[in-house]
Length: 271
Length: 171
Image (cartoon, each protein chain N blue to C red):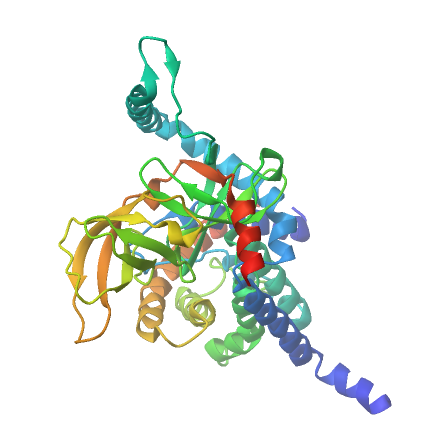
């Protein structure tokens, strides 16, 4: 016992060092999971508050472009509405029955694009109806998936994340593929598992597929920048330019898929 | 001003500056400067090693909370705090600081300071970027990040130290 105490006293620095490093690595290893740990969850509100305060300053300088963006989106939505607007009866004809998706507008309070795993913090949380696994989009394209929710804030795993995989569809040929982020650049992603017989041209459009069960179908993901044909019998790859500009992301929508609980319970029963 | 109060203010200001300003600077995807390390660099020479370690860990963990990467900065900053006493010995040689309490650009030689900052920033960035990738899969990218980020961090930290030096003279 005496020897042990003497040993600890003599080597207390190295023991403390190893202890702290082990704690760090354990925390880091746990945070590699899709859902992050209690530490981020419990401090999310405080961190979100500080980020919001920081971004409010920056927001004043961007009011002009934000206004323009929202006005453009308004115009587009009005145009879409006119399709179902019946001018004779002055009513909206929603013939295909019930609503599938609910859109919750939110603002980005913090966003990174230069890490290996990027997260976005938005200013809506549990109290606003945000839940895990909801998808997040911007006016331009898809953004990411909600991974953690606190009372007033939520963190979103952006497409710019090494673990991010999204099921996508090539618009022209309807073929399925998957989207990953392996470049170091926030403008570009990689479309993988493209069937061998498909040849893509720069400018081809990539949309979300319904197979991922994360994003609604047919949302814009981006356009092909460069096609990389691989060896015979291997699946092809292509570089894609994201429709969303992650560097200037301000206003986003969180999508609540109203049919998701039903779909999930059906899938659970199949397993 | 009380030394402890000064250090707490330094801690808060450096962390906020890091997460609200520096982290939003985008320089081509490979350059990620980290200036919050200045806090560890400026701690007194006489501080017990265990205190250095604890402060390094707490500082790293605070930055982690903001970047959503628990353990990443904590691990790298703890390693840096652990190596600080040996690095000071290494870069000083026979140099003795009898009446100097803490590293201060005003009282110490500029070249000494540059060597000191370089060694510790390099250790921190090396650990950080390797922990971040968590595997050696993208070793080329990791090395490029270290190579490009270290000079930028050192430049920013030296600028901050210069400002702190001016402040010290007025007191």
